[in-house]
Image 1 (cartoon, rainbow, N blue to C red):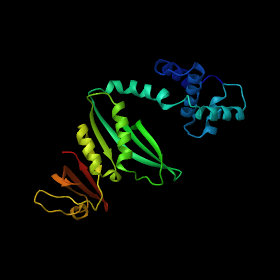
Image 2 (image 1 turned 90 degrees about the vertical axis):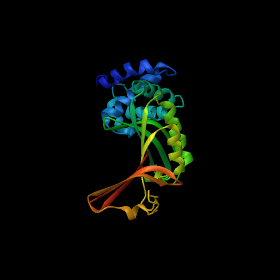
Image 3 (image 1 turned 30 degrees about the vertical axis):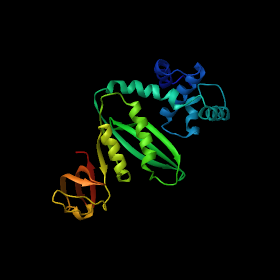
Length: 245
């Protein structure tokens, strides 16, 4: 098998930005990333056909892959952050849309992640994995990840954060307001909102008729936080969103 073209391109690009401990680490990293791209899989055994330009057996390949992913010298700080910072340089002063979300891993670990939405894809800006049996985490835990993301971003960007209803929390909104970030947060049906006239219904009571949208400006939620509210009802399911004023 000839040396894959993605490997040649990757080693050329990575050499410009990554300061690995030694050249073999960078070569193996490039080779494995190339195998991931060509296989389209996160399963180690699926990478083997794309590593055959090295003359060794499958068992030797698997041992080498296992050693690589457990190597303490192969870290995101060394191999990912320099690439991310290089990519984000061109966004200085530009509008950015970020998403805050969580995912469960093997029903035991929770991944908290902030991603940049760009070109129909999401690019990881900051993440943290905690041992936790639920995708619902405390505000203090995901604020740590947001602070990590903030440090990675260039200055003077116009940030808008998107988050699902699990992040409907006054502490988060206060933090976003302090950073001067805009935000859209999906809201729960039982959230109580205070309207301009002083009435305080729940969002479920404000839901419009089918295929209709209700918009409310300058309402108060979550300990007198001022925001705008939009509620849409489509095909029997409703969508409720809070947004910064």
